[in-house]
Image (cartoon, rainbow, N blue to C red; front, side, top):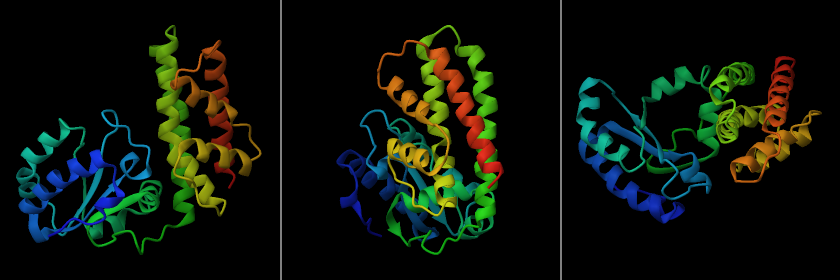
Length: 243
């Protein structure tokens, strides 16, 4: 049971994954169909010491005995910034693509399979399912960002952090909009924003300002950015609603 495609990983990620996934394979053996890495660890945006390493593990069977057998490995991994892996069966993926189209497409476009078969090779997503989840995610984030403002207001750093977290969480939905427009979304966040800004007749420059604020660029009026950010989310939600 050999790991594959390790040369496509950051050295830090590779080092952690060889040990972690070898333990998974030793415990579960032939029950594992596939192991893939997705997110920043496969996109080139991985930051040592800060970024998590996200895993999807596809098994033939998942029950309480499987979960218990992985308990020690997973708890040890959490200490090394390896969150508990997503566990799916092939059938679960097949029957969930109508409710998780954004997530599955994101994994399909940005992953490295390090064991087993290419699980997303034949994945097909219905565009209306994708549109509906994009709409739900953006509208939901608009509501939750308004709520979170009450806890962050008065502290410029906390408001900037709130905006950044909100934006990062809707980037997958923005990628979904790009797909619905018939284009392939980039992997890097800044490139995603640039592309959707060109594709839609909506001013989304405030998203760039949010990214810059997180990187330490000085902001004179964070409340103004917050207001324009909410307006941009509303316009995006309205756009998807009419697609």
